[in-house]
Image (cartoon, rainbow over all chains, first blue to last red):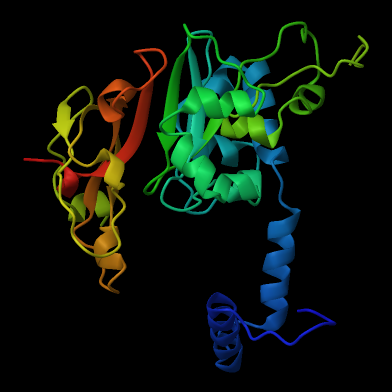
Length: 205
Length: 100
């Protein structure tokens, strides 16, 4: 809500949201507190959960197998509740790079990655990454060599997707927590690759 | 009873070549226009899910429809596609959107 300036009526969707919310509260189906709590929890959730799963897969081959076999069960194995989520994890290899999109709307594994970034929901990303993935990835600063095959995954129905990036070289002996710190949201969508920060000094972890 | 048991029997399995129906019905359709009419290969069978076109009409969507991940060659989907000929795009296609 604006606190100053010209009066502007609600947009169509704002009006729908307020009407539905007030009806649900008036009928005692939910409370304002429950809605505020759910919104706060949603805002708090970030890609750290997905990053923890990736880091664990990097150091634990048995976990990696579980992750690729059934992403949702693998999330639960690390204590993440993912009710209803059907997660497919796709693995980057030296031969294959994966990237995720939802061309129809903005489907995204929110329970593991938090809210999707604005660009993920934008028409340019959704319409372009399916037909010119190399160009779009290059615009993100991710150049995929011509000999590497690109798999684009459109989450157009009931599955949700997360990329398992390749573990960067020279990270031998790193702790799970330190490895997880390399895995950004964009790595999990497939528009970026994990990178060791330039100023990172070798240290025992 | 699980959805699978209530549902339509899966007619296709991994590796099968399938073609997406080229139709334009009205309503809430989860098959994007860009893939209609194209042929690909079943990458995996995802299980069975209530038909979203029915759910959108407040009906139960049963029997559940088998859902497949189908892999398409980018070169087949986009005329003049530039990139590795092995580049692919994968989508989820409900069985009733596969041409018999």
